[in-house]
Image (cartoon, rainbow, N blue to C red; front, side, top):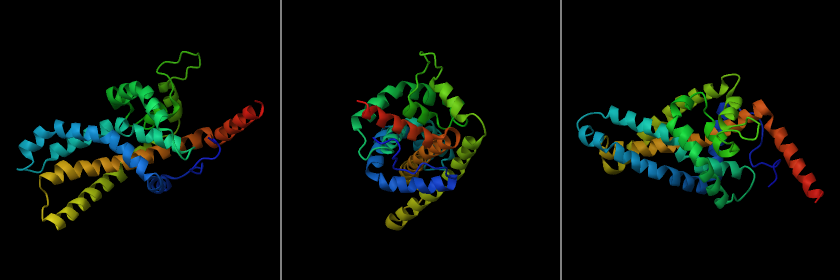
Length: 259
C-alpha cells in the first residue's frame, strides 16, 4: 500500500465536482459497490416493507399514500448509515489498493458495529445534520468510544474537531437534500413511465411498494459515495490530508529501509 499514491487525486473540489466524481467512482467500482450496497440494503429494505405493510394494505388502493411515502423516507434516512457501512469501508480501502481485502473489511465492520448502532441508530437525531461525516469517522478512523490512552481522541471528540469551524459541511448536507430530492423524484417517475409503457400500469401498488423504495435506496447509495468524497475533501481543506499522507508514506519507506 502506497499512502501517497491514491486512486483519486487528492485536491480540493467543489460540491458540483464531487457529484460528478462520484459517478466516475461508481462506474469504476460498480461490481463491488453494487454487491456491498445490496448486502447492506436488502435486509433493511425487506424490514421496511414489513413495517409499512399495514399502511399500504389499508390506504394505498383508495388514496394517495402520503403517510406511507413519508414513513418510508424516514426509515431509509434512519438506516442509511448502517446500510452503506460496508460500501464506505470498501471505498476507504479502494483509495489505496487495487484489490481491497474482504476479510479485513468484514473485521473492521464488526469492530465498528457497536458505535454505528449507538451513534447512528440510537442517538441519530443529534448527529443527523451537524455531524454528517460521523459514519466516516467511525468506520475509517476507528477511534474508541472513550479515550483511554490520555490523548482524548474519542470518536465524538474527533467528530467535533472535524466538523468544527465554518458551516460548509452543514451547507453541503442541505445541498445533498435538495439534489437528492430532485434525483429521487426524477428517478421514480422515470421508472414508473418505463413500466407504464411496458405494462400499461401507472400509479398502482408496485409503483409505491417496489419502485419508490428502489429509487429511494438507489439515491441513498449514490449519496453514500458523495458523502465519502465530501469527507475526503473536508480533511484536505482543514487538515492538509495530502501532506499527512505524503509524510506517512515517507516514514513507512524509511522504516523499511532501516530493517
